[in-house]
Length: 340
Image (tube, rainbow, N blue to C red; front, side):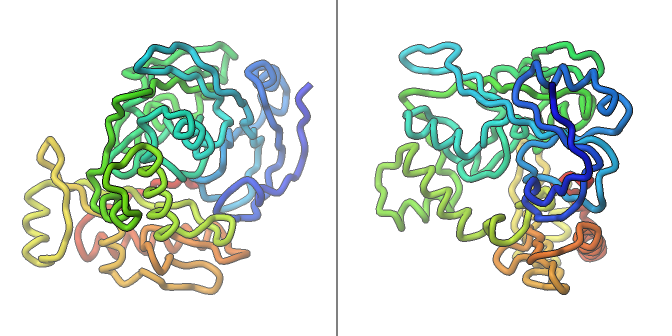
């Protein structure tokens, strides 16, 4: 029988360090326990929040419903050849620990995604990506449980409808499925290394690495992330608060004349991706503090809680930043963080 607790602090379960309360709280460590929970009156009669690592959300108030902590574990080999290995991974596995496990085994592909906080189950929801790599490239399928029926469903890669920080689980299938496991295929040899980002190349040089491998790239990425992003165990945050916006090439050309230093990265369809951190910094927000919340002094894309911060105040700050960027550049910033 799944235990349901009442009036539970969510402080240990979100990296922003917000002390919101859940009216009801339960943990599930297997598909069976989750299916059992779906039949409970508390589950049926309340709004619900499925919680992984709590690294991509902001609580702006107490949650007047049931929070379900997902703790399904396991890393199992599905298929293996001389060149590739396919793994089925429980949704509750820590993402970074899984990446470390793969790097240590010599399984390549996701090393650029080192040190991203959160769980394996949450990773495909927003198609996590970093330094030229996105998780969608390696996903074979995703197993989910339909919340309304308790029925299992397998999603192929194409059915996941991946996009930039997007998937079907953020739109059409939002709040309709529990992701129970993710199946990925990685390379065992002839690794396709991605060192396209200048920061990765520079860090490898600092490490005196002339011939990088998956382990050295993983180490380089971790060094970069640690130098730019605050540790959530020290300073509350959820990483990048906003997505990098994509704008029409004509708008970019117009803005470039007004702001010659504006960076931009042209995509295949001709649109231009602008670093949100640059936009925010140009509006004067970088390093600003407001009592016990603020904008990180090293990375303007990161909003922080220095301790005891209020989630509603952080959201209010985010909206002020959004407004100022819109007024200065006519660019809409969209939160990457889920607002609860």
